[in-house]
Length: 209
Image (tube, rainbow, N blue to C red):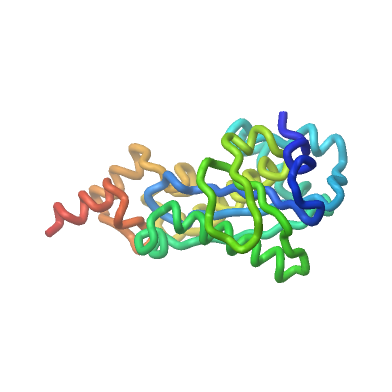
């Protein structure tokens, strides 16, 4: 289970944020990132024991934990990069952009990061010191909480977009390449929210020429 061991071993003694993202793989919609910091590592033990990598939790459990984390006294920031920005920058750089925006969101609320623990194996070129942590959402409590915030936030965005484009089933598939999504693409074509540089969408565009 994730804990604060990695946060406590960081060289900084200031505000240490865990950062994670949701939505690198889907064919449409934004990539969303969140950053989370519990000052002085103060968190309710029951909540700490319930937090885990968002992928290991059911959607119902994530939805229950989301408001608990938001109201836990943690410093939280949320950022996103659009499908258009993903196409312009590539998904890695767009993910870093969303992460940077999450830190900027936290800073605008008065909580500037002194150090960042980032899920994954690639480091962005930022002015603040940071460290990547492979499978960080299973190791760091801050990153695990960020993974839940990012995932639930993105799911809500896709549910709203699904109201505009119900035929694609985004309220259920979150923009991933499921059978119903593929069938809708073949029948109705792409939308402004699709990532045009992603191979399945790019292939569909090429076939339409």
